[in-house]
Image 1 (cartoon, rainbow, N blue to C red):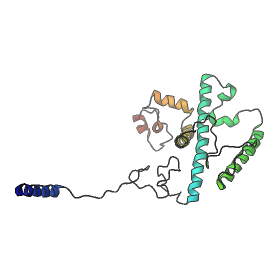
Image 2: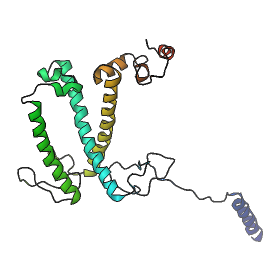
Image 3: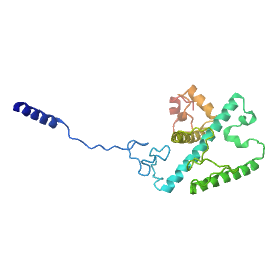
Length: 246
């Protein structure tokens, strides 16, 4: 028995000696840059929809500034979604022969179209409507929850700052956080898409869907490198090697 105990002790000692020493591992929070820590002012902020720790310039270190940037991103993203949808729907209506005379106007020249009233009148009406909307939004920004009525005096189901309860189809009834995330993701995509549409307009003639069709038809030839504008420093020889005809 003594021999068995001694053998087990020696064997256990050898196994323990063979095991590597434990090392401490530093786990970084997963953000937009996996090689960097999430900034302290964004870490753990689940109340910020779509928070991936993206703030390379630390613009949101001030809590009031972060609050302002969050609302600014949300509002600009919503306008971008409406803008991109309007551009693409107009082009689809034009290509299918629907939409009447208004659909024949290129999106960049939409302001030149003749409407039911002079442009000056429409600008004045728009200014008054925007003034009402922005003043109410500012009031809610200063004191969240203080503005819960629509222009007709009806009560609005207020949710939180930036989300005044507009959900006529009740999509977010049981999963509000999920729809907040979907909205901000689509808003960011729409802002990038609108930037791309504007850049495309200045680089190459043609509407967005026309340019997309041309690229899909011949992706080796029709791309941003070969449009002669996006990378003006490239020589004609390089363009020709890439399939261009400059």
